[in-house]
Amino acid sequence: LDESAAQWSPDGTKIAFEADGSIWVLTMSTSATVNIATGHRPIWSPNGQNIAYEYDGVRVVSANGSGSTLLGANGSHPAWFSTGAAVAYDLSSGSSSSIIVATFPGGVKTTLASGHHPTVAPGSTWVTYERDGDLFSASTTGNEVVVAISAKQATFSPNGTQLAYVYTGTGSDQIAVLSVSATANSTILCAGSHPSWSPNSLKLVFEKGVLR
Image 1 (cartoon, helix red, strand yellow):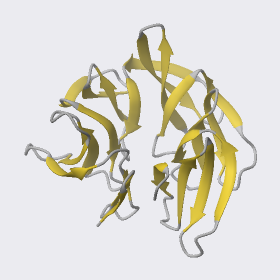
Image 2: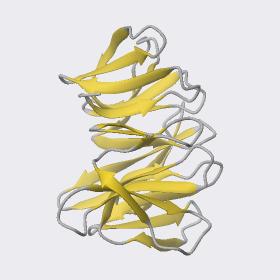
Image 3: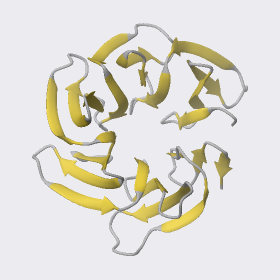
Image 4: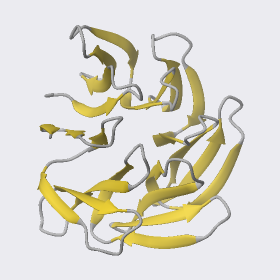
């Protein structure tokens, strides 16, 4: 894919991506594409029925392009909880940024931690995010741990066992994978950015193509 911010649908039949300031959905079996919204950084809901994205804040739209709703004014980088009942995003104010958790639908908001670019671990209440060039995780109960240094753009595999992210420690963006349960070092795979897992957790799609 030449387009950026590509995201597999949960059932593996579609890919949402950003091109020319719009959100598109590609059907894998037919290669047909549909423009569903103006915006950036599409993220599928766990049931595949909705897509969160950025456009003058964090919005949610049906996967067929109907019913766009503003969830968080001035927010960015949305990430779904695996229940589909909440979205984490970052909210900037001056030079600082906070991780916000908003219920969906409803939009009841809670501030979780200082940071930006959140992603949520499948089946858990832990949110991983960036701060000062490193990755941290915090639970909705307030506990926080360091995940990786010199890292950004984290995304959990659908089965929750691996964390893909972009390692920046060598001066260029590289795709890396870390086992969630192991204490071993991360494995650097190749140059690239914006990684996204396939539904079976065996492949990554990223800005330069598909890694098999």
